[in-house]
Image (cartoon, rainbow, N blue to C red):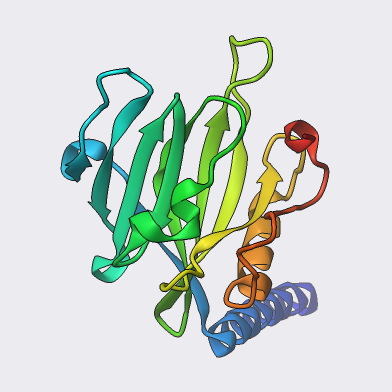
Length: 192
């Protein structure tokens, strides 16, 4: 009976510890929510160019009605956010290699307000037959402050998701968009 009580009390202590962790996360007000980037559900705002180097641009629905601007040019994607997303620094940022983006977009929230996004990009690798996986954090500061602030090679870093969330939570809102995004952890394919 004593052994059973000890095991049960351990389970209760573990449950209390989990609740305490959840309370600490809620106390900071940090959370995530997700939306999808599906071009078939977006509004095309620019069409492809005749020369074939510009594939078009779309405005997609984001968290709480925020615009998500997605463009493709020279086989590279560009993603920006906000009411004037096409004019933000993020609209001109991409990876050097040909790339595509994942459809799942993570929005980092503080007390329900979006302050950053995390998106997985798939750059082509030098062999041309495979792709890498890079997580990019973009801070949301309309009026010239929406830009990429951090990136992590998700294949070279085991804890890539935790790294980009920490970067979003600590850097977003104060990052200088005239600077290059920070490359975090093992740079992997991000050595350029």
